[in-house]
Amino acid sequence: MTALRWRNFRISFKYGIAFFATIVFFVIASCFVTISLFQIKDALSTIDLTAERSIDLTHMTSLFREKQLIIMDYSNFPRESLIDEYTLVEKEYSDIEARIEPKMDTDDLMFLFDRVKKNNEEMDNIFINTLVPYMQENNRDAALDAIVKASSFRIPTVQLFKDIKAEVDKLRELKMQSAYRDIENSIRMLLISVILAIALGSIIVYIISRSISGNLNRVVSLADKISVGELNVEPLKYNGRDEIGRLSGSINKMLYKLQEMIGEITESSCKVDEESKSLMEIASEVQQRSGQIAATMEEMSAGAEEQASSASEIANSIFNFTDLIDNANTNKEALQVSSEDISAVIAEGSEQMEASIETMNHVNEILKGTVSNVKQLENNSEKISVLVHIINDIAEQTNLLALNAAIEAARAGEVGKGFAVVADEIGKLAEQVAKSVKEIKDIVTGIQVESKSMADSLEKGYQSVQEGTTGIKSAGEVFVRINTEINTMAERIKNVAMNLDEISQNSKKINTAADQIAAISEENSAGIQETVASIEEENSSMEIITENANSLANSAQLLKQLVGQFKI
Image (cartoon, one colour):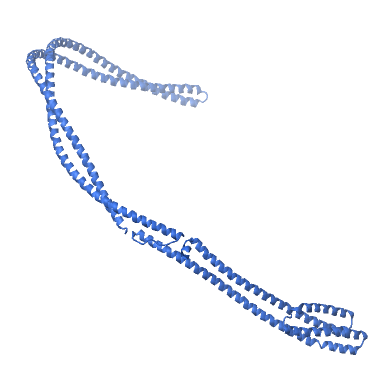
């Protein structure tokens, strides 16, 4: 029950408990160390008091000796100032004595201190009550006895001070040794406490970490087995509501879901594999039968196409033959009319031939005159070319003279400026003339070329007219022979027309029957082709179905292999 309750805590809370326990151990250790430090502080305070006590004893010894010296001085030189000084020293000595007396905390110290106190009181009594009065009375002998008696206290009292100081130093040394031991014990206790706190904290953290890591290792081990497909494993048994408990619950749920899902996938893949195989067999059988039907229908389609083609050819031949007969029948009347018209046209043509011969002779005369005129134009163009050449030479000489005149005008200076302007204008005019002459020359050259070409063309036309005249004469003779032949042909056309009428009627009947046969054959061929196309489409669809079924079977096999990696 306690372990289950501990598992319900979160991991952060568990580590918090470990941290809190470590802090508690540190606090406890710190308390012990603090107590030890206070004890050490008390011991050090005692040592300080002992040191102050030693200093006071040393100071009292000095004051006691100082009083001894004052007594000696007063015995030699009695003065009131020495009495006052002694009183002041005695007062300081008494203050220290009153301060240090409570610090004499042992019987030995109290015994020694009482003896010092008694000696000091007797010495004060001798000085104040004996020596001073004797010195004031000038009783030297009695004063000397008092001095001797007072001096007798110096050595024993100083020795008593030494004994007291030795005893105090001894006690101080013992207390210092005790304090050192307490400090060492405190340091040792502090180290032990720190080590124990760290050790206990580490042990608690180790126990918690070991518990957490052990459970996590079991979770990781189960996850590794699931990752390699081992689903036939024991689920995690961890009753807790911490992070590991929630993780274990999630892993167990995932394991159950994977087992259930892999089982369903395995069953589905087997069904898909079986159904895909059945589908492939059915598709293959349908495809074979469709191929047989398609082959048969293609043979029928080929026969129907041949029949339709033959019927169409027959119908076309008969139709063409009928058209020819109709055309012939139509043309025979036209031939009769045309033969009569041709006879009239030939007669008229003969007359026009004679008129054409006269016209050609007239054209021949005109062409002769035109050729003569063109030759005269060509001669005149050559003369113009000569004149243009002369004008061009004159323009060049004028330009040269203008240049020379400009040079002379430049030499003449101011006097020849007007002449230079005129020479310049003449030069420009000569250049313009040269340009114009060049243009005229180009035009004349073009005229010569065109006139020469025209002369050649006219000569060729003249020759053609002569040849045409001769041809027209020959054509007139041919027209006479044609007229004779046409008359003969008209008689023959009448005989042919009678036979064509009878053939035309029979060909129309044959044409109608051939059209009907061709139409029926084409309908049969179209129906067979549509059937073949449907079968081919169905065959293509079955091929696609076969491929898909094959792909589905492969996918099912692959799925079975993948699912087979999981061990349920």
